[in-house]
Length: 460
Image 1 (cartoon, rainbow, N blue to C red):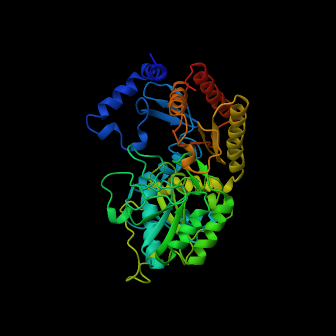
Image 2: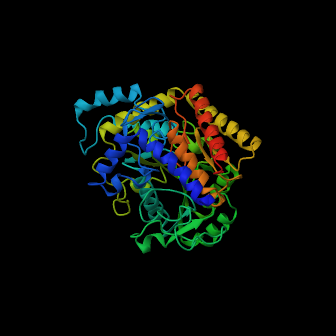
Image 3: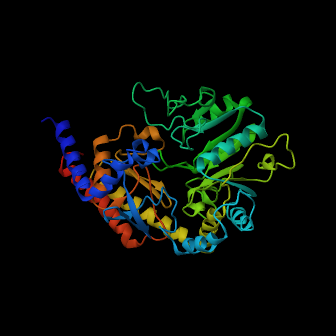
């Protein structure tokens, strides 16, 4: 048996242990496959060796169908900032439910929800609701093109902004086959799926993240550029924060050329600070997109911005130029109730952010110290309550810095996290108000033990 086969055998052993402790979960997923493609409703639910099947969740814990308990740092892909099943959200939904789950019309509770957005986010004077982050970024780009009167939009390599055709390009990890991503200074638009409309993705300009060449490329396309969209912290790429000075220069140059600056705050919104990344970084975009946290655990998306930037959503003011935004469930009473409960607590208890962000700082500091002292080729990234760890020495400024990571070690770490009772995505983890200092100690112990195990097994 050569070394590659030996490592594969070790990883298969971890997979066998996971399957052995979760036979009911495995059976449920296999049953799903008979009626659902891949047995999942989202690509991002797939996992090695099989998707988690959840039975219940509460606070900082989640239980699978076999009643195995896990420390939850996935939190519904960052959604559950107050922890799972928070009392105030359950109470709000119970109070709203008897009035009806959906009207397809205005209702008297929309104002309070929208007012919280405008009060909390420094760049939001008006906001409109939809049902997902994908919808929100789609509408934000439509608004930019209609307002500025130019056809092109730009995104950053590694950025994930949902699944619509304009932005499902260049997530940054090389796809099977020849690498078509182009030079680091001038990334090429690479479609992330068959079936995307060529007229959409081929006209999307891809910029290098945290790289000054991005500004030169923006200037080259300025006469036809309507807007630039950016995640202030790239989530799915591996929790990679933008440099503060980079964001400030991006704000300056988009203003100079008359293009919209769009912050994708689907993850960072209401997570890094009460006002999200724009408050945290002190950089105010024209428009921001939202999801996750502000939905209180229910399907949600939103677009918010200055009154001037949102003007073409004033349908009754300029009907010939206003953009198309519509949705049966937009701002539905269940989501409005849940989201209002979350934002009210966050606005009344801003100290929660200091505590959650301190837990993230502690994790990154201790893991990076452990990696350095043990000479592990690993680095923890992130900012505030968002974190991840990668099998490279760093620094990590863009998704390209992760390409040389140890894939076997990465796979082994994920398997050991799950085997040892941690629920987390491959790309990012999150702290919540329900996590305790003891939980963070346990989280660090799981990470360090996994690193030591892989070294002892010769995987790393």
